[in-house]
Amino acid sequence: LSLAGAPTTTATITGGTSTFTVTFTVTSDSEPLEGATISINEQTLTTDIDGIATIELENGVYPYSVSASDYVTHEGSITVDGAAVDEGVSLV
Image 1 (cartoon, rainbow, N blue to C red):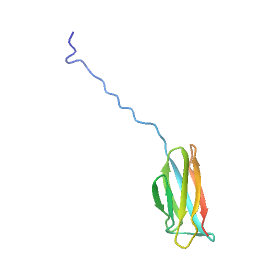
Image 2: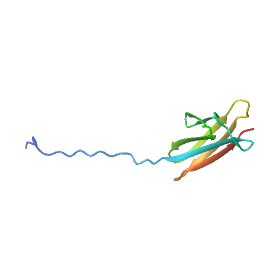
Image 3: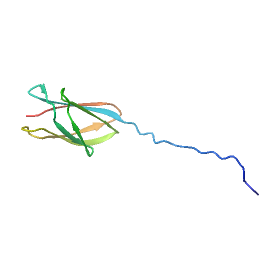
Image 4: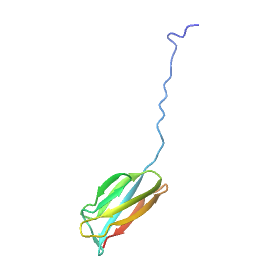
């Protein structure tokens, strides 16, 4: 029995993991805080002029910390569960 020249089929299966946008809004005295540093999921984000930073994450629970010069560091956690997450943080 020889299979030389027999047609072959190649299938590529891609993982079906979905990510969701997590948006941090960092303020101080109700004003946006530019340049705050957010550590989450082994990554570091920096807030923009509007005090906002975003990251794409899969479902799960993620501890984070938010820090900025002359402010007390804030620690918390978020849960991503099939939808985008908006997390407001006020530094003092």
